[in-house]
Image 1 (cartoon, rainbow, N blue to C red):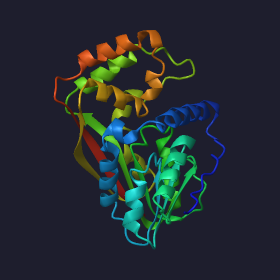
Image 2 (cartoon, helix red, strand yellow):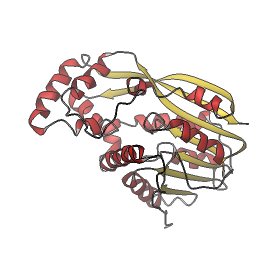
Image 3 (cartoon, rainbow, N blue to C red):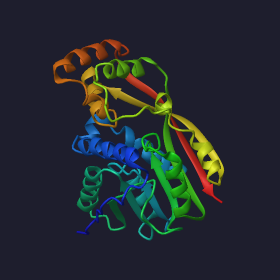
Length: 287
């Protein structure tokens, strides 16, 4: 069985505050990595990852890197798309995520894939190393998405393809309201500085504008809907702990957690609980 390397994070050079933010992001997803991802999300990320891979137009023999690979929702279908003559690399800031995905790749006996801990804003690869860079639901999390996109352009060969997903709006605003109710019970984070983009982070940064600024061409956005079906409020509650929002939920005092959960349940839409979310698939070509 192949060994899937996991390497240390490169030194973070974006300043002390940004380094601390990245440490907190990594810690949150280390905890998330221990969850039953499939149970928490019902294949939501896998379906989006497969669709992004399809839209990116990967070809047999391509070398592809997945920025923020998580548990492999993009990495594994990308590896399949490039075939045995291609190669897929996944990088993630979270050591827990990288280890879990590397173990899964090893369990499946995959030989043309590797996973490592790395920072998508300054990945440790040579210029022009890949024909494709993909990233799903990550650019709204990383502190400096412009730096990540600049890194993607550096890593791409001329004519290489970039593809990313980001959240659009929910069809029913009550889903967002339910989480805002939960967040109102959370204690403030003394290390968190105000984020000017936080109010818009659900829909992500303006990826097409960042791509244009970085010199990408043929920029296209596909707006498609994705569904999440929950068996009941408890399933929704579990899903909130299985992603980046866990960082907020961890700050809800244990003594108030049941009160917070009950208040959020009251804000949810009525059964059946089907969440319809717009997903923005953005693709571009490296000029």
